[in-house]
Length: 146
Image 1 (cartoon, rainbow, N blue to C red):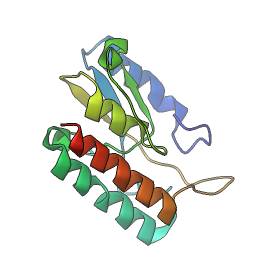
Image 2: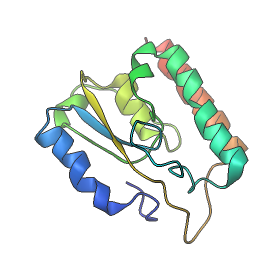
Image 3: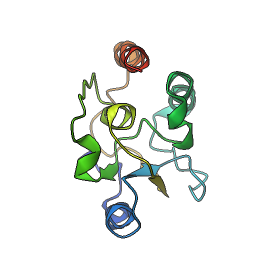
Image 4: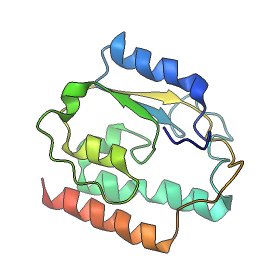
C-alpha cells in the first residue's frame, strides 16, 4: 500500500479478509475488476496516464498468460499469504512488486477487490519514461524465467 493515500485504507480489511477468511492466496485492490467505479482511475495523472496504465497490462498478459486472470497486475495495493513467497526468488525492478509476486510466487487463487484510485493530494507521480523502460525490462526478465 502506498503511503500517499491514493490507496484508500478503508479497503485494507477487505483485502486481508480475502486472504484470511476466503482462502485467497493473494488479494489485489483493482481499478479494473467488476464492481470498480467508473472513475476508479481518476488518481492517474490525466487521460494519457490512464491509457498507459491500461496498455501496460498487455505485455504482462502476453508473457505470463496465467496472469490474465488478474485485471490489475501492476497495482501497489495487495495482501498475500506468507507461503506465496516461500522459495520465490523475487527480482523487483522499480515499483511493480505485485508483478514479481504474481510472476514468481506460488499461488492458486487471486481475489480482486474493487477500489477507486484517488487523486494525488501531494507530491508527484514517479511514472515517467525511464520507469517505463524499467517496467519493460522487468517483464522481459519474467518472460525469460518461465
